[in-house]
Amino acid sequence: MNVSEIVELEEFLDKHGRTIELNDNYYVILAKYAVFAKRIETPTGAYMVLTHDDLRNIPILETAIELAKEKGEYHTRISNDKILELIGNGRCCVEYDEEYYRIGIVEVKG
Image 1 (cartoon, rainbow, N blue to C red):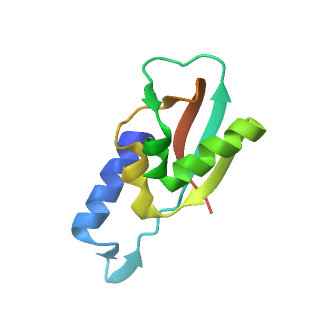
Image 2 (image 1 turned 60 degrees about the vertical axis):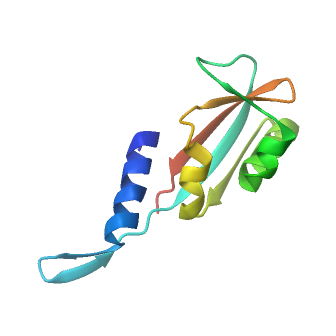
């Protein structure tokens, strides 16, 4: 799934609920996601500059970037309510502390 599909799915589920009926059976839609951050040499396309204050407002992104800074990359599962907070700007590259990071949201299979 790409970012716009994730946003569309989450907005649909928020509006209509996570339980659906299909052929007299009921199903609960559970979508699981992970955030990843990877340190890169140069940004690819547009990027946004983040400050310490910016990251304090999004703790999971702060953790991802700090650990990517140490290890080169980092990923962890995140709760659905953090998805739009993380990808609201739609950008996949950020600059933080004079280094560049690729940030992404991926669907967790299984």
